[in-house]
Length: 196
Ligand code: PNS
Image 1 (cartoon, rainbow, N blue to C red):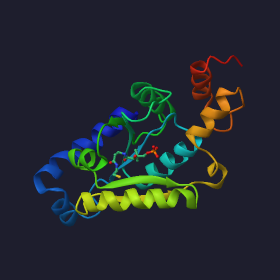
Image 2: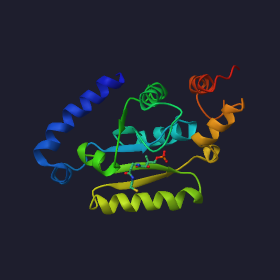
Image 3: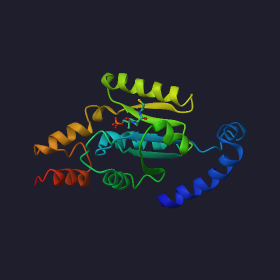
């Protein structure tokens, strides 16, 4: 079954039920049948093997994982939101229960609009922890407990990886083949006008 057919069949089952019962009533009434959906928000500028590792593992836990790119007006990204969405779509095309989307503004508002109650984030090291804890607790507080965060510890081989370091290595012509899929590496070098 391809990705679109999979998601359509899952949503066709879930949406009318969720609307009729309300999310929590539905969960209580039909334990075991509710579809577990989560959002994995991030900048993904661009997606790395570290992100893909989290995506694959979260997609095994949830029925549907929505990977959503933040349209952050404060930062100047290397790739536009549209480019990052396309890159993510290509990189996740073989994972049937992953959807790619984008959002602006607060995550709690995006989650509420899309009836999402779990955000997934990857934790690489203790340096991530303070920042992630602060965001997770703020989101839980602002959403009045409706948005929780689930952390996946990054696989050890990707613990050092970040989109920023990948871009820095690439802009000096370094080898990023261990950090991102080949097609992403080509797009990064193209942005920096580096021939390899
Ligand atoms: O990949 P990143 O840049 O570490 O992702 C950070 C992200 C997108 C998860 C976070 O900045 C976010 O959710 N921003 C949206 C604004 C928001 O809701 N902030 C939380 C309150 S502090």
